[in-house]
Length: 196
Image (cartoon, rainbow, N blue to C red):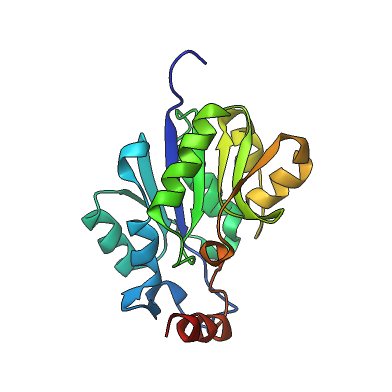
């Protein structure tokens, strides 16, 4: 690749959050909704394009306020794979895509920027944030994996592709706090207690 890789950013914000029981992206941490934290984490200048896939009106409005492209997922019940497919197909002209979940409120913009810079030095690798050998999110996939990502079905995301290509994976080390996600009301309460 002779030119710097054009990297897209996909914010996956369309899930039904069945384990949470309601739209968890509207839940507040440190005075801001989870989705606000996610959008603020994006170092816009690092990406050729930023796409937010969602089913929620409040996320759509907020993402547009940030100047990001929004795709509505009309079938969130089809699982994470449909969000991955919509976003990947929309940015298929990119050389790589960073896939970011929307429920890691302690993730820092500086860390995302550093991960992107690391990927630019290793553009043939899948680069995932991790700590102590444990993989987390976001993950950056080079374009050669797009066909497999768009072929996913059900509630499966990039992890299924990574499991088939462990030899292509490099972890980018960050603090364990930044990897914490909010999947349940209990996890949200624990996070709020930590911050308090």
